Amino acid sequence: MIDIASLKVELESRIAASDTPADILKSKEFRELYASIPTLAVDERKEFGQKVNELKETIARAVAKRQEQLSAKELPAIDITAPFDVNAAMPALLPSDQGTIHPLMNEIETISDIFNRMGFVTEESREIDDQYHMFESLNFPKGHPARDDWDTFMTVETDASGDPLIAPAHTSTMQNRVMRKYHDNLENNQPIAVIVPDRTFRNEDLDARHEHTFYQVEGVYVAKGVHAGMLIATLQAFLEEYYGRQLEVRVNPFYFPFTEPSFEFALSCPFCDKQGCNICSQSGWIELLGCGMIHPNVLKEADIDPTIYTGFAFGCGIDRLVMMKYQIEDIRHLESGKLDFLRQFSA
Ligand code: DAH
Image (cartoon, rainbow, N blue to C red; front, side, top):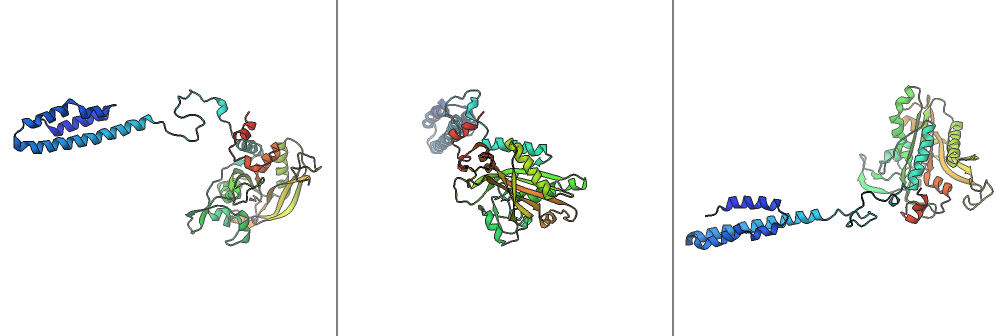
């Protein structure tokens, strides 16, 4: 009598190695098994016949499984963002015109490079943060009405104190972290000098000047004897290098909870030399960024003694900078993914 148990093991290993597993169901072993049934004694036939049927079912399942495996192997992984037909044979190298660096990323590199040459190091922000870093550490107590000016997207996840985690509405959310990270600089008589260019999010009514997702560059500079003149000179030097020409700046008083005094920084319109044009709404000036001397409470929250050290900080909208540089009339182009827009920036 054929040994069904050892036949099962053998057939299974053949299926696992086969590219045409269905053939095994029609193999000569099965024919022999069925042919042997009538040769058995009558009282053995029923039990043996049942075992043969069980074997056939087990093998049919193994065949189906193997077939599934084989067809999964044949299907290419589908990448819905691929700018080519995933089923077509791919050239060894994609033509170089199929991808370029996004203009904002290029500009972030330029901005970073200018600040790095002035001695600032570059750090990254994050796309989800807690309310401590976004508000409390920046001298916005819980329930402070100024929080409404940084209205953003909430997640269903909560932090340790039960507040929702949020998409940061400004890169200032990194101030406390970078001051702590570079705290030792101060003991070594070095300044803390950091920029954070990264993504930010706001719950905005969208129009040509407002996007829900945009970029800012934060700057933090702390040392002994830092004063507002240094802030203004640093920003002016940066902007003149970025636009490649001399510019006049205008500094107006403003309010931010995390700076005292606080300023809004405008520069003479680089397009019309203060004559008034569409880009500057005929005013000759363009408001560019917020800045100020870091509030003593913000320094204290990062374990920096405000009676010994002072610092300045600024936060500048990168999209706005870039729009002015290239005369882009609508901020929404930048995140639109439109190729006819993006191709204008490819080298
Ligand atoms: N975080 C502010 C905003 O998003 C900009 C800003 C203002 C940043 C003053 C600063 C600062 O670091 O000191 O509007």
